[in-house]
Amino acid sequence: MLNIRRETFADYPAITEVNRLAFGQENEANLIDKIRHSDRYIPKLSLVAEIENFVVGHILFSYIDLVNTEKLQVIGLAPLAVHPQFQKQGIGSALVEAGLKIADDKGEALVIVLGHPHFYSRFGFQPSVVYQIESPFPVPEDVFMVKPLQNYQQKYIGKVVYPPAFDEV
Ligand SMILES: CC(C)(COP(=O)(O)OP(=O)(O)OC[C@H]1O[C@@H](n2cnc3c(N)ncnc32)[C@H](O)[C@@H]1OP(=O)(O)O)[C@@H](O)C(=O)NCCC(=O)NCCS
Image (cartoon, rainbow, N blue to C red; front, side):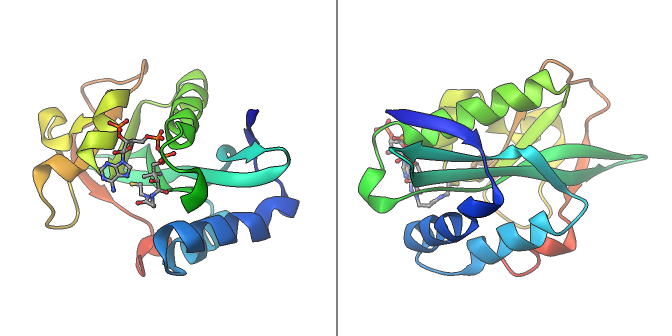
């Protein structure tokens, strides 16, 4: 039985391990650690998926900036990892859905992700250019995506700026 809940301190080693296994490197686990220690961390939006008390997946949403004439805080989705032995069973999707609902209920306006269009389009993510939102890096338009939530307003346009925690990813 899959259970999705907020991370606790006791989950940190398992979250590190799931990210290390899923990505085959340490960068994403380090990113999570840096975000946790920054003012961009949103405790209720760092979620684990567990099966019989074993952490099989993790997702983190944190604050990033959208800069135009004013600077607005939006939500960045990164990273998302599912243990390799548990992929393609709907766990990643369940984590995304759970996080989007929490962000929406919290009154957030917009979620931004850099990822696979085949995976993220099913949740309503669209290329950011559709919303006049520009990526900070030179990436193909279809991999930099946004999902407007109920509180989305047209003022959410401009260029995304990631905080320093993301520098090494
Ligand atoms: C991407 C990831 C989180 C998906 O988790 P999951 O639990 O396997 O996802 P689900 O079972 O909910 O959905 C599987 C779907 O995602 C798609 N998917 C998974 N990895 C993908 C990839 N690298 N590129 C494109 N699509 C991918 C699968 O093809 C499948 O699509 P289908 O439903 O049309 O068959 C997981 O594969 C993972 O941890 N990958 C390694 C880390 C990673 O790349 N994370 C970045 C996410 S931006």
